[in-house]
Length: 238
Image (cartoon, rainbow, N blue to C red; front, side, top):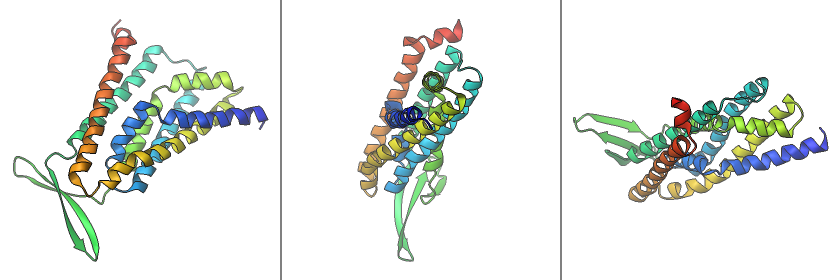
C-alpha cells in the first residue's frame, strides 16, 4: 500500500473511535450495558455493537459504491429516523425491566444462583433464569441499526478521500474496527456502575431507570429534530 493510503486508513481508524462516542451510540449501548452484571459482558457488548455497525455500513457502502454513492435524501433521513425509534424502544424496555420482578438467591454446589420471578396481576407466575444472556445479540442488532444511519454520508466522504472502490471498502472496514475499539472502551466505563451495583437492587434499578429515561427522551428529540427541524415529515408527505 502507498504511504498516503496508510495515512488515510490510520485517520479512518481514529475517526471510527471518535464516531463510536456520538451521543446516540453511547446512549443506546448504555441501555444494553445496564443489563449486564459482569464487566466482561458489558465490554463485549460494545465489540458486538461495532461488529453489527460495521456489517451494515460495509454492505450498504458496497451497494452505494455500485450506485455511484447516490441515495435519495428522504431515504437517508428515514434510516436516521429508525435510530430515534430504536432509542425510544430501548429506553422504554429499560424502564420496564424491573417491573413486577424480584430476585432471590440460592446455593447449589457451592455456586450462588440468582433467579428473577415475575408475578403478574392475573396471578400467573413466570419464572425466568438469569443465566441466559442475550446482551451480545441485542447489542449487535443495535449496531446494525446504527449502521443504517449516516451510511450514505459516510460513503460519500470515503469516496472523496480514496481513489478506488476496493480502497473504499478497506477504509470502511478499518473505520468499523475503530468504532469497535472505541465502543469497547466506553462500554467498559459505562458498565462499571451497573456491575458494581449488581447486588444492590435499588441502586442498580435507579441507574437503569436513569439510562432508560435518557434513551427515551433523546430518541424523541432525535425524531423531532429529523422530522420537524430538518423537514423529513415534509419530504414524506409532499
